[in-house]
View 1 (tube, rainbow, N blue to C red):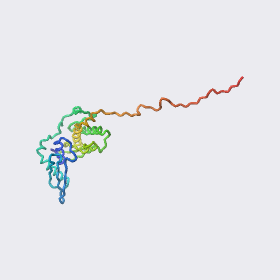
View 2 (tube, helix red, strand yellow):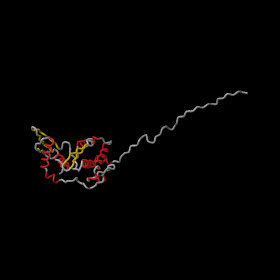
View 3 (cartoon, rainbow, N blue to C red):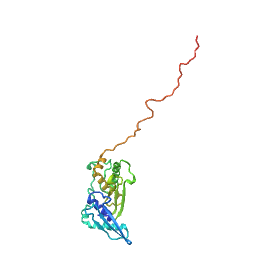
View 4 (cartoon, rainbow, N blue to C red):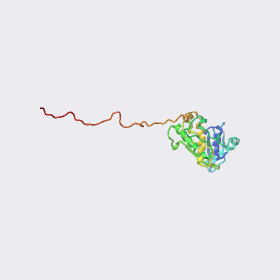
Length: 238
């Protein structure tokens, strides 16, 4: 599994459980010993909530990486058994196959040529779910550079309920843009599989009409001003 230890561990858990990573699924605890750090990672989402302590390091970040590496080594058989590509990658899936329409933005699974399409699909779907235009804070991308390229995790805090605390880790990409799109692919797959979101995305778009469109000034009756003289006249009798 390519990538640094922490993101690879996230990806392993996500694929193993076949669901997005929750905020409390993987918990790191770090202790200081003089000028060194040692971290322990607890996999709360797995049976028994196993914990793994890593080697000491000069920084907290490195210590967490070491703990994640030990966790991966302890699950090496399971890691090796997982597919190296996203299920269905290399195949294009029509929106109709999932029983929903995405308003013209169908996610394209995999491929460098498809970069940006999954991100477009996520933005379109999220806007329809939230029923408003998106702001910058609605999609949060966190990318790290790895040996094989870049790996990104996507969270969408604007989603309702527990969805707001979930995150999706994508496959390693050759650049940050590709890594973001790979994370969007995972997120889009989860959104499509949710019945509530599926119903919202399948519903036809409602086009709001301008209530003032077609109306002109004035009413049925116009106002007019005019002066008229009556039968005024002066006459002299015979």
